[in-house]
Image 1: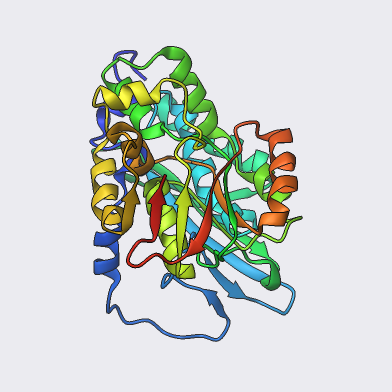
Image 2: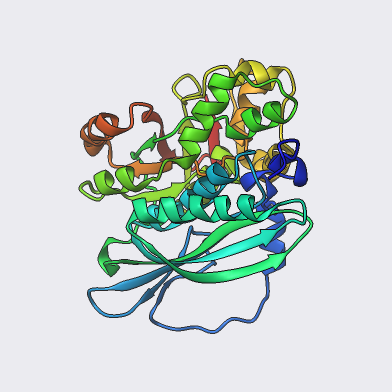
Length: 346
């Protein structure tokens, strides 16, 4: 690809920040005719990460799809990140991805070398995940986009859902926040190269290790933190459980330097959509800065897993996670529902 063409310049939005807002999406889906099936264990009614269909008493099919415009300029890295993000939905359900299909939109500004690099990035992550890409669909588009439709498997009794948080649970997050702010600053040429490299490495990292570890613990609820931001995805968990999630703002892990970038105003459009969705259900203590709250609404791409686990199991789970994921952190706990408040940032 020509050296003066940057993938992120070909797209209006970047990564999971391109997602339709959660509130708008709920309105679009409301009232659509659907069929019922007793084998359908998880559908879209709880806004979970993937659908799950029982095949037998021992096996269930997990299906998801995810694709987005470039969030980085390097085509190979873009392919890696988009694939890791798609596989994450299966891991968040406790499943193992097995088959995948490419979804690729090719911009006329991209040459064959760039297109092949995107695909190689996807195949690279599929190989790491132990999944097989068996085909796909490619079209022309003014904006490049890439992702995967993924099928995986999970035992029906071991499904992790996003709506099962219980009072007394501890909340753990496995990756730091700040991806949307970092990539927004990068578009302006004002993100430190070291920060951008760290963000790219984090986005390309599979959530496989976290899934492998948490399946040995009695996890109540789990979701991955992506386009709706930490507060948007935590809101889905709290609403589903009918509880209030209390977040300790001092313990939420952030990428280095992103708070300063948020203060400077490098905020992606998706942050404002996420704020409109979650803010009516959120209470923030006095002293919590606007910039920090912005980061809690910041859309993440291929973010970490948010885990709700009984209090007694949280310390050993956190120790096990930190052996592989040093940034894993206990970020809050679950209390009985406080009026109309599902989220409380302290």
